[in-house]
Length: 203
Image (cartoon, rainbow, N blue to C red; front, side):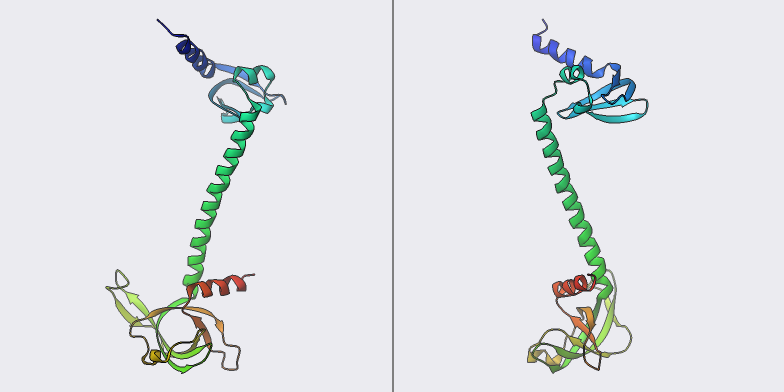
C-alpha cells in the first residue's frame, strides 16, 4: 500500500523532473526547461542554453504557488547566502593579502650575519655580511657569503652582549635609509615593523 506521504513525494519529484516552457514576468522564455532544484528564493532551471536560476519574484503567482514560494523564507535564505558569501570572500581576501604580504617582505628580506659596533638608544650600527642558503632546508644546507660586507643600521637598540655578533645569519628587512648624510641602509629584525613600513610607503 502506498502511503499519502509517498504519493506527495512522487508528485513533487515529477513536477520538478518534467520539462516545460517557463516564461518570466519580463517576457523571457525558457523552452523545454527542466527544474532541477527548488530553493527558497528561486528555481534552478536547465534548458538548451545551459543552467540558470530564476528568482521567484520574476515568476508568475501560479509558478510561485506550484513551487511553494514563501517570501519570508526567501528573504532569510538570501540573507544567509549573502553572509556565507561575504565570509568566504573575506577568508579568500585574507589568504591573498597574506600571500601578497609574504611576497612583499621577501623582496626586502636578506639573511645576514650582523656585528654591531655602535650602540645607540634607538638604533644600532653594524657591519653586515649577507649570506645565501644552499641546501634542502634552513638547517641542513650550507651558508655562503653574498657580496662584500657593508655598514648598515638596525632600527632598534641591541644589548651590549651582542657585541660579539651573530654566528648564524638572521633575517633582516630593509625599510629604507638613514636620514643623515651617510644614507646607510636601514634594516629591522622585526617582521611586523617591516610590514608597517612597507604599508606606509605604499600609501
